[in-house]
Amino acid sequence: MLTLHCPYCGVHCDETELAPGGEAHLTRHGPGSDDADFESYLFLRENPRGVHFERWRHAYGCGKWFHAARCTVTLEVFGTYPAQTTAPMQAILDIIDEKRPGWRWRDVT
Amino acid sequence: MSDPVTALAGREAAHRVTIRDAGPRGMVTLRGDLEDPRILRACKALTGCAMPDQTGAVLDGDTGLLWMSPDELLLLVPCSEAGAAVDHLSDALRGMPHLAVDVSDARQIIALDGAGLREVLARLTPADLHPDALAPGTVRRTRLSQAAAAFWLISEEKAEVMCFRSVAHYVFGLLDNAAQSPEAGLF
Image (cartoon, rainbow over all chains, first blue to last red; front, side, top):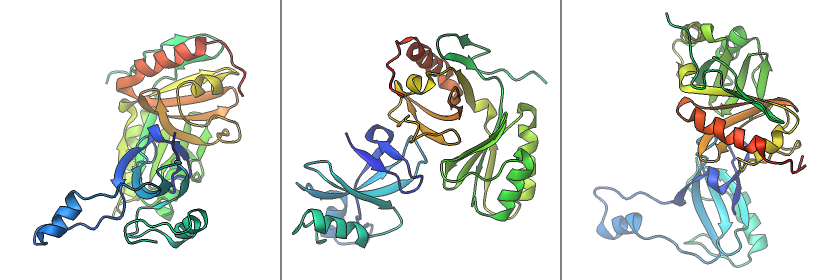
């Protein structure tokens, strides 16, 4: 069971109160972009064993989207942070550095 | 004009915790910048209540303000005053981005009375019902079994549950069933 802290309403919500939103921090490549970028945006996703960044929506609560960093192996949650950002917050990266030295996710380390 | 009728039409179930239709209640959803002084003034004028903090519920009898999200508030007012409350908000907030809607007929409020009400709710929701996590004066939006709901404690022996009108009988049935289960003594 996954319990995430909603950064907007401060509630510790159960997984069943949330709607999953897939991988975080994707860059949209729309019309006019080259095929490789578009394919990557549309289809190619990380499937990591370990640190992962995801989007979640507090569907049964305040309704806001937020980001979560967690470990896919242990379900340990490193932290959650608001959606108004295009990259993971430094504070969250520091926590992961401490707990999973040498980790890597896409080109984030 | 016809009289307002709730979906539960006065339904009541008396167990250790009594579950009953709380009757018609005026409910107005307000979305906007909750820190704007005009919103603070208008809400105070309509309910007499101070602006609640994050997840707060400031109640004065049947009127009150419930914090729903960082940009959403629910005003509880007497049933007959909901329409006037929307008009008041629309006047007071003219020119600033906001949304004020009378949702009284779309919702149902169910009252819970009795010492074991934390346990009754805990059987149906993933929310933490421990007194440290949910004190009177806070509102928790969550789900009761399969239906979206919100609840707030008025005291340790009195709480209110709000759900959509369309699932009112379903939620009432859930609470009725949970209230009949033997006490587990968790809280």
